[in-house]
Image (cartoon, rainbow, N blue to C red; front, side):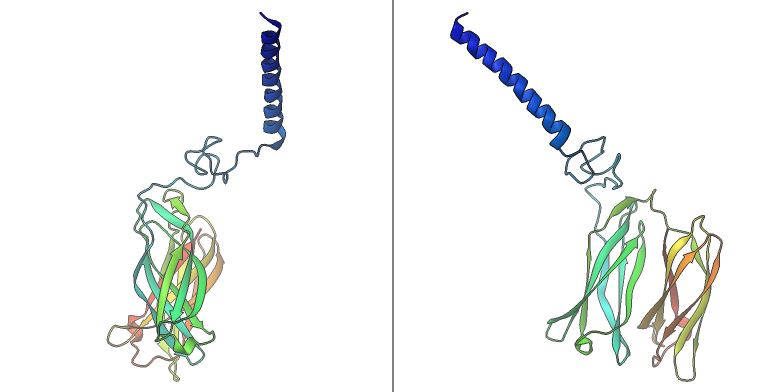
Length: 254
């Protein structure tokens, strides 16, 4: 072997060793550790940044978006604010949305955007539910003629891991005061094995002709297992109301 060839071989040998040392040092001291947000399927994950050690469940490609039933309804319960009601449905029987963000957008008669009101909620597998905001007051609310609901960023969870809590309505009675103020009084029970951190009670009021005439809500926090709680939902006077048609809904998250 010529002297020049030996120099080339030895040079390549030392270059390989040096490259190995550099790569090893990078991997040991500088390369980011695998995580659930690195955009790679590693550390035993079932998909990219999901499953395995990651909290986020891997979802199927055919999972459907949360559906909105018609256009949100706007009500004018007082002279100082408006209320809005929307009906949604999770079409997926195997997945619930542990959390999603939503925005109510309000428009005037010329379809100009007046205000956006953000919120957060959840939806169990195959659940049909209402989203409502009561007596909102913002600049220009008097001109609101139309509302739009936008739902974004649902965090899908297997229905086996996100089950509907067993909260049951025990009673509900609607009364009307001499001044016409409506009050829904009732009781519900937590039949589940865990404390419910928050229970939302929504009351829908209907006219004598069966049309939705108003909405109001209340929230009860920290309901232990087996506990029965009373609730009260108030709404200003509504003309031509039929108190016997009032519908009450409970929405709770474990």
